[in-house]
Structure formats: structure tokens, C-alpha cells
Image 1 (cartoon, protein in one colour):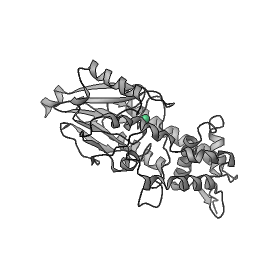
Image 2 (image 1 turned 135 degrees about the vertical axis):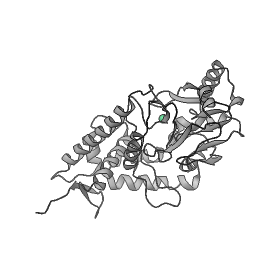
Image 3 (image 1 turned 45 degrees about the horizontal axis):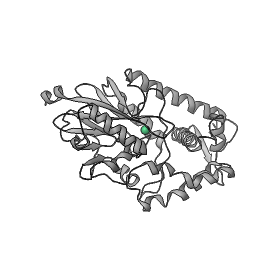
Image 4 (image 1 turned 90 degrees about the vertical axis):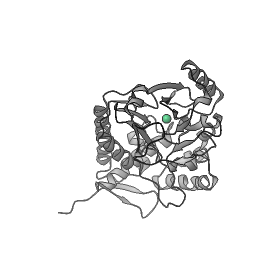
Amino acid sequence: MNQLSCKQEIKQITIPTPFAVGDVHTYIIITDKVTLVDAGVRTMEAWEVFQNELKKHGLKVLDIDQVLITHHHPDHVGLLDYLPANIPVYGHERAHPWMTQDQRYFTTHDAFYREMFAQMGVEERFYSLLGAMDKPLRFSCQRGLTSFVKEGEKLDGLADWRIYETPGHASSHLVLFDENSGTMIGGDLILAHISPNPLVEPPYLGEKDRRKSMIDYISSIKKMLKLPIKRVLPGHGEIVQDVQQLLEERLHQQEKRAAKVEAFVKGNPATAYEICQHLFPKVFEKQLLLTLSETLGQVDYLMEKDRIEVDATSLPYRYKTKEVVS
Ligand SMILES: [Zn+2]
């Protein structure tokens, strides 16, 4: 097993995306198997870049034995549509309905976001965005997972690499950790330059409630703090070296933002939309879904910690700090 890990090679392949986040990194792990971790967006440009980069490493598409997907976002799965149909694709079960663009799932989205807007108190002028929520999916794939993987599992040919479930940025998120070298392939969980947004996702098929993404994200970061991670090969941006320090910083930043929300609603009941404007006065209009997701995350967190309470008797909901009765 150790001999294999000595021979192991990891290649980073960087692919352009049409999204604000910029390029996405995919990784090839070469052992006795060739494993691709993540695939870029579904554009001709991405496909050409991917093939050329493979060639530079002496590889071709047909050399890829298997694919692991860190999460279901289009910039990490789209190119799967161009790969041969018989390559096994592994990922978390929750990625599957997004990747297959399961209509039973998507038909509930519109109503979910509409209700979310009403509860949060979003201005009417933004309701026109509702139909466009799933628009980035045109850069995604229409191909599902061949098998689901779970926490603790390993893939063929990757004896040193263990899978960890790390929901938050996406509820399907997982990472791959090489216990021998301390290297993690981290998807979008740990990025050097930005704190990944805990995106709101409509409830899954058969589930009644949405996941609380921020609370998931915090547990995932805490789980990662327990691992001896030496470096993270991320989905975007630079390789992360001071991993522990960055993880601590992310938790600290989150708590700071939560405290800002708490201070804002102290003696001043506010809607989530008002909180959002307070947190992101400059960008909330341009990045409404992202900033609403972040706001809802902080609200979920403070509710969970019993630091604020909600008046949900009428729309929109209003949040305020808890009255302390002495
Ligand atoms: Zn990404």
C-alpha cells in the first residue's frame, strides 16, 4: 500500500468558467488507476482546455478510470457530459438529482424560493429573479452518479485516500484526504481567498425542510480541524498551506458576522431582507441569492444558539434578540 502511495502523482488541471468565481481546478490522481476529481463546466472552451492540459501530462480522456465529484455545482460537474459514458462517476447521493436535472426535484424549486422571498421580506422588484434561480444549470451536466459514496469510504486504487462528508457550501459536498501525505482535495470547502457561501438549497425529494447550510458548514469546518491536514488542493484559487489557521479564521469571521446581525436586531425587530441589506449594502442587489443565503445562514445559526427569536405569525418574518426576563 505504501509503495503505491509513493508512486502516486497528482496533477492540477485548471479550466475556465463563465462564472464570477473564475477558473476551476480539477485534479488527476495517478496510482494504478487514473482518478479525476471534479470536472469543469460544460462549455466547448472548457472541454478543449481540459483535453490540452491532459495531453501536457501525457494523458488522454480514455486513460481516466473513474471520476469523483466533490459537489454538484455546475463548475465541478458540467464536463462529465463530454466524458465517455462508461466511466464510473462517484459522489454524494445528494448530488444526483442536481446532476441528472431531475424534474421531480426542480418543479418544487420555484415555489420554495417564492416562499423564502416572502418570509424574508424581499422587495417585489426582485421577484422577477425567481424564474432564473436555476439558470447556471445550463453549464451543468445531465448525467448522474453511477454509485454513491459515503463518509469513511475509499475508492479503488486510492487506498490512502479517505472520503469525508463536508456539507455546507453544498449539501452534497465531500472531500478526499490522503492520510499519508496530509494532502486534501477540498472542492470548495476550504478556499484561500474567499469564504465559501453556504448556499440555500430547496428541500430534497422526500424531505420537508431545507438543510441549514451554515450550521452544516460550521460542523464541517470543525470536523476538518481534527484532521492533520498539511495542504488543501482547492477547487478555486491558490493551494492552501496554513490550513488550521485558515479554518480558525473562517470560524472567527462567521462568529463576527453573526454578532453583527445580533447587534442589528437588538431592540429592533428586522426581516431577513433588512438584515441582508445591513450586512451587504453594496452587493445585495447584484448578488441577491448569495447574500440572502449568507444572511439566512447567520439567522439559522443565531436561532440555533438561542440568541435571537423569530416572530413568524405573519409575513415577512421578523427576528429580534431574546428578551431576558429577570
Ligand atoms: Zn466551485
